Length: 190
Image (tube, rainbow, N blue to C red; front, side):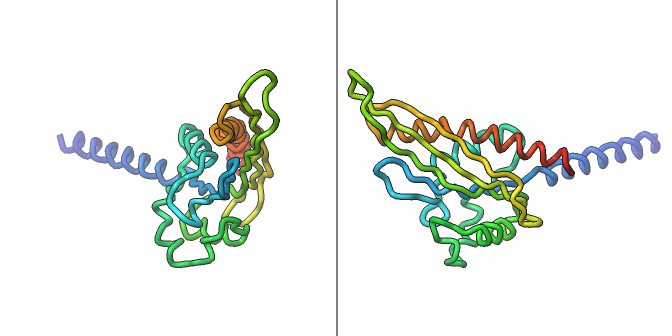
């Protein structure tokens, strides 16, 4: 009987250690993508309020679906409040790496997303809208840029702000897949 209890205890311990180890080994990512939609101000959650942009929200959603851990902005609020250097919309690469180190991230996605309006769609009240996103994927431990990625999206909408948002979502969806592929390539390289 004691052997069975001992073996059961060892199995439970092994399972709990395996689960905790697996949870700790999830790749942690911080998203720092400043965004400017049509007719709107350039925004970045770390510079003003705790609110992910359209682009960051879509990227975060896809990365989480793939099993990556996206660091929540609320967990960085104290760090950002203490150091005014992080309150810039256009954060520099060294500052982004420093913020990532303080938040214990493995990678930083640093970039810009811009939506713009084009011409009217012929015989319609709709406007063409376009989005461009460019990012660097940076490995934090050695501050190495492992990928430069970009994506474009488009949409047609009667309201240019809503059309810009749709274009940003479309571009972010494409970019998310490229980021996931780059991260998977990184895993294979280790």
